[in-house]
Image (cartoon, rainbow, N blue to C red; front, side):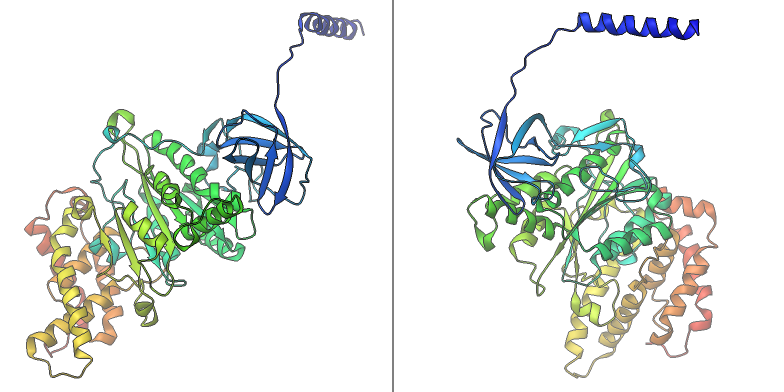
Length: 509
């Protein structure tokens, strides 16, 4: 009892000392009031010193961003539900810009742009926060893109290579497989030491749930951060989502790691920005988008880069997705993004309907980094393959008119049909590098040309299975050697030829 009384006396003595030492301070604080509220937007008066993009707080705890800073009032983009706010409610300045939690604790989590968890794994615990809007890395602090980012998709790795630190646009009409390409790329990073960030922008809840289920089923969620805004979320949340996701990715890049970020998709992001801008009375321009629509995407995608060794040598590779309408890649937003990025992968609905999956139109797709971000083994075979495939596509169109074909044309069409069959690939089934090289070399050597077209699927699987027998030392050289040696090339060709023995026919094309 005496020890308890002593402890209480000591505690009260400390409280008394703290009370006597406390000196109340009077700090000026700006408090404004809402004048009008509309869908996703509030007009506020009485905050004369508020800064552009400053975070403001409403009485019910909702947050907003000062978007229009005029002389007598400000336009605030709401980051929460607007029906809880009313004209006359108080608004406070926070004195800071919007930031987001970053760190290892986000891996395997599903969050919203404010860092709030959307899964059932409890609160997110991190020790660091970064502003969602950050300046891009200076030019002199960047390195050239030279190291490949393997997607596991044969047609992309061979013909449209992506490098670590590159920005490669994926575009096409609705339901042509754009998200599938991005997900396949994420799944292929399971043993590549690459952190992935998937940002779903204004997607349907059912679509996002399927995507998360695939990542979980394939054990890819462990190295992935998923940021989600759904179609019924406020336009303000949809607008800030890709910036918040990029700050999370930049934190990992700053630690020297390679990061892949997918924006799915920037069409919804542009529409959210248009909605906010028109509600704030910003003048619309082409196709009703405000004039600064280019800037919101350029300042986002410029943050993707490869850092110099002094800054850790990490990289941030961006795969923005954009939706076209009626195959119109010359529309406003697609052309903006094509000019910002380092290449594009175009998915054709015509090829999709023909069952060519992934439906990549090689003629309209390009990687402006090209062979510099491609392994030597691919460079040894990809050039001839792309030329042969392009010739085949032209001849195929010509042959549809029923013209009589000479022997050389018939051979080119036969070879092109085998190329197309080999480049077909099932969804969520990335192909490792040795298997890809074996298939591509077999195509270059025309080993598939005598295989009946209806047996091409089985023949390709046989070559993939045979590629597993390639010696480990040769596989290592495929990943690291500066050139593909003749000895390694002949060894791989002999393995492919042996696996195709059961599929060969006596009829030569």
